[in-house]
Length: 251
Image 1: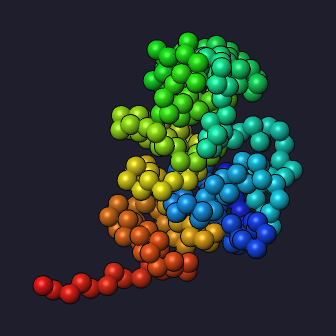
Image 2 (image 1 turned 120 degrees about the horizontal axis):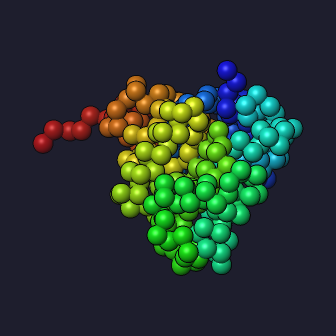
């Protein structure tokens, strides 16, 4: 089975600054991979490269076995993404936005697909509202519906839990699990350990552009991962071996 996404030696520089440093990562269908890291760690750059929004880099990146720079239109259309820009038209209604993107991707029944997804992200009652009328959390849900409208096989999500309340977060978590359970692949970047780690099947940490941790979530519970994550953040450890927590003096 071809990897949904694979990169080898992926390096991206902005002048003297290395946003990504020789990253090797392979993600297979059915996985839900969470990339954790502080602001500026390289998470968004990685997703933008994976989504073909950045095409200048060193190393190789492929999706479903095809080099991303030469991938067929059909293969590139198998990707859905939600980045910081929600990519929706502010003056159009939520329903009109989804219908537009469904037609753009050649969905057989744009109207039915749009209505189905609005119900799925719990925006059915706001179908006639313009995007600018929605709250931040509602806009995020609409963006997620837009990313799913063409039934992609690979979802790229940048901070997907941003602006979502607890109920919406749980709904999104359920959607991502179902998507992966049906053979889809999820790659999300986040610093929200509490919400993302329980959803993920695999956790990755980027620190200063380097991959420092890559393990299935079954190998560490939330508390253990949280310790490993904060160790990386506080020590700047980029070699993938979290240092032990120092023993605290007894009172």
